[in-house]
Image (cartoon, rainbow, N blue to C red):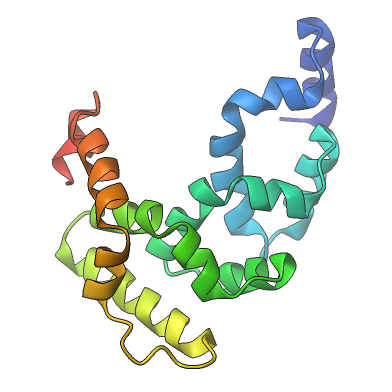
Length: 167
């Protein structure tokens, strides 16, 4: 969609750009943030349109974008977000572990799930100082088991039967 078209919609709806986009923030974020490294102007233009600093946009949308990025093994974007926010990858993961793991466990097939779990272990071990000696998949799951189970139970009751069947 052309920026002029968006401005016309804003005008016709008599809303501010942020208010117009706000209900779709999660969908916008999962489209824009993964392209941060390959098309950085996309996030800058999106944030300029809604009058939000890119770092603030990334920070607010972490619960939606990190699960996608970890499940898709997008190390480059995760590392850049870590740098931008001044947080370690381990702290980003731990703050959102139940959402990330819930998304990982909803992938199609055990091979994808195993691949994502291996990626998580590798990226966290690579960036952590000191190295977490006892960091295991079991430990990751146990650290957020209640919230993780709650996320998975909610998905089981999802109206989209295909999505519910993935759990």
